[in-house]
Length: 280
Image (cartoon, rainbow, N blue to C red; front, top):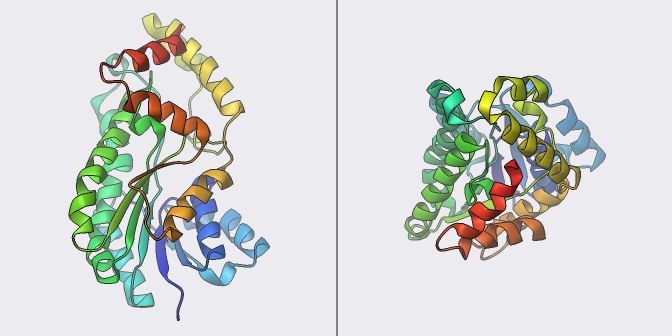
């Protein structure tokens, strides 16, 4: 039998790169997509080092472009005859607070983290129905727990979680399983790619400066003890191969504990008491 095919978005670095390599090691043909295929060298080197280069295929895809998403999915199906799974991993971090943001900045965060997921999912669903496949979306603990100075990012991830939780029972009626995977802090380039000059950001923050400084200091500590991208990716690969994948998966004990606070916090006081401490 030919290897099952999985399309993965956002694979140039971090969790996405590790998902592609891990899926290939598990016997999947991994179609690894990224906005800039010139950044594929690290993925190709990792694939060579683990002996799975023949199972990894790099393709260009900017998930914000719905036409490109549809074309990419169609090309994958034309090349391989089927699509067995999708992993929506592409995303972008963002730090800011509403009073000091342009609405266009918030829209841009939503475009990548929410609508990008929808573009790929919409294009893939007919083919996942045909294969009775699975749809996996990497969200974040920030898709469950709102976090200071992550308003736009958490809003996008909350939206993805709500969308997928609502889609899951509908998709199940046509044989497609839907799972969200929630990492906590991961030691990848994701935070660096936010492009935040910390001192400049604090200086610009005005009345919010002390709170932003406290938040950034706390975040530095959290990421110093972060999970590795490979460990986070292992939870995604396990979901790919699980005969009965759960609708919600966390990638670490810390993530499970953090999400658990919200899911048992009916009045919101436990969450806000926790996150208020991040900005003091």
